[in-house]
Length: 114
Image 1: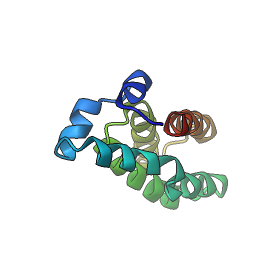
Image 2 (image 1 turned 135 degrees about the vertical axis):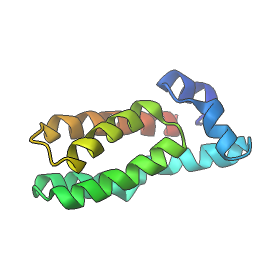
Image 3 (image 1 turned 180 degrees about the vertical axis):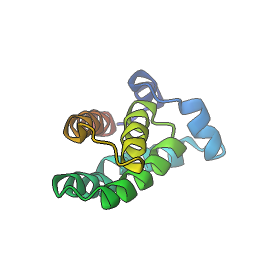
Image 4 (image 1 turned 90 degrees about the vertical axis):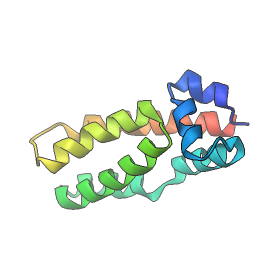
């Protein structure tokens, strides 16, 4: 079962995240549990595979908002990074950035299911 302590160990700023939901821990944990299944990850990955930087930016930007609001810092920091590269249409190693994002998403999923 997901806990605030496990999220803190992951690097989440749970204090700020909880403030955003008026201290309602059950609501916060329920919202966090939805993140690993967020379709934005698949959309981002698919857009990058198709070299569609505009769609990738849209997917990353949407993920950024959700992750930042929940203060899932390890994951949101990486998504913010890729979002800004996509915004600038940088010639960047998006594949390695996406791999790191997916590893962190998988780790969060393990936390949610433990």
